[in-house]
Image (cartoon, rainbow, N blue to C red; front, side):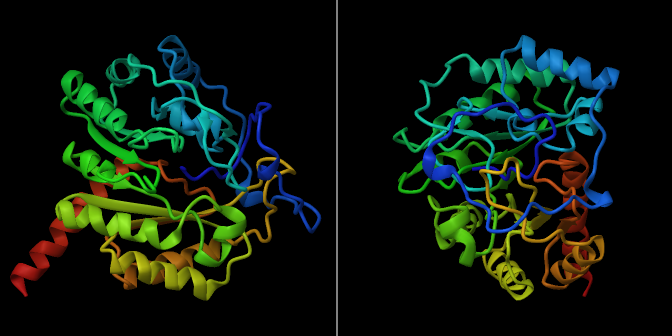
Length: 323
């Protein structure tokens, strides 16, 4: 499931008992560098109306992203397909857990219509986990990609997918649809998976990202993590090495923020200086693009980052040719 890091306008959510987390320490007070203003701009309201009129779900709302005001003001939104009920119960995530309904066959066309109405140059498509579906929702991702390409062929498409665990052939189907960026988040270091992401498998996610490159070496790959969950610095550095071993191009690192008291507690607020250090190290390890800051999110500034990602690849290829 996609990284869910904060909530500014959280709404009540049904969730399974196993999703509840008992914090073992008092809730830490947010530092000034993590605070954001409530969204009120004209652009934000117009984007909200487009989303509402097309009966769409966005991760911006479902995850209560702190950057929603900034992004929606610029008519940027991350669409969450296949409903708003997830089949997994991650301890960090504010998306509802339960039994999802059937897929909406009109959703691909509705997403494409919204992309055209918003005039998006770059769009991010994510989803809940759909372990109930035979292909994990792979074909639905494909249908959305094709629908966007049909009505807005100039729009570049970034997908943020589930892990398609035990869904043979699902990944191959999605890669064949040729999104411009394939993103799959590791979310946290492997030692935290049992408590933070119990339904997933760390090395399966690493292999999935490597498999994307095996299938299409030209496709940009991307992954993101949260910090502040109790991980050690050396674990983050090892995770970077694991991603580079899978030839991942782009890493995002952001501060975890506890959506409710039932979720995993924040163990630490990582300072901006520490984020900058992570960025420096990540570039030395060979990533083409790094976004590392308290408010970094998987799809924040995704369009601008995609342009920089392409430029970085071209510069690296030129350097190799002229060496």
